[in-house]
Amino acid sequence: MKSMRIFILILAIGLVASNQAFAQDNALPPKWGVEADLLVPFVPTAHIVTIRASRTIVGYSSDKPGDLVVGVYLRPNVKHDVVEEIDEYLFTIGYRQYLWKGLHLEGQADWGYAWGTQNKIDGKDYNNFAMLVEGHLGYRFRFSPTKSKGFYLNPHVGIIHGLITDIGPRGGNSDTFLSAKINLGYTF
Image (cartoon, rainbow, N blue to C red; front, top):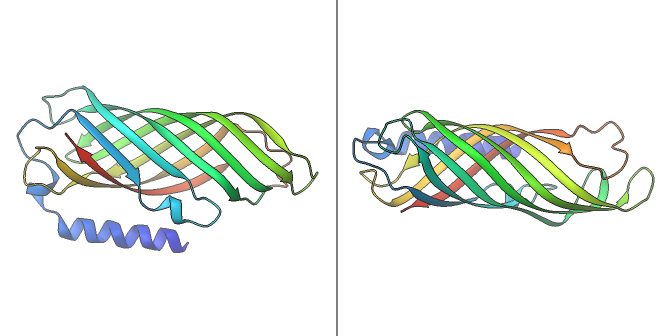
């Protein structure tokens, strides 16, 4: 809950600090971007580091572009509610569609490998292929007066679901999670 309050506070600050000139204007935007999550690496029991690159592939000259997103999802040696410790190293691919100004929907899949040590129910270690799916709603706040290259803040909320994740018996714990992220990025 504390992370959600922090997310809402930062979102409110972003809404107050930005205006029409910061959000979007009529110039063509840069095609490339890089971003990293500032929030989740510091959330207890999550500690997930995500680093992503984006490339506008649809509607480049329109006000509703679409971005291909690729990146990594890293979760090394983290205390967990189902196993004593979890390690996840995943590759991310997704798509971000802008709906209005900086408002966008985003869907992605994360593929890779996961290790869970000492499951809290059966005591076994588990390691296997993992696949997560994510859906988010967000808003990109540009911190440059035009769509030219520059920094942006991209807070978003959504859901993450473990489509293929076997770290042993879950003891009633869900494999679907609410998600809140605050990405700091740079377009060029």
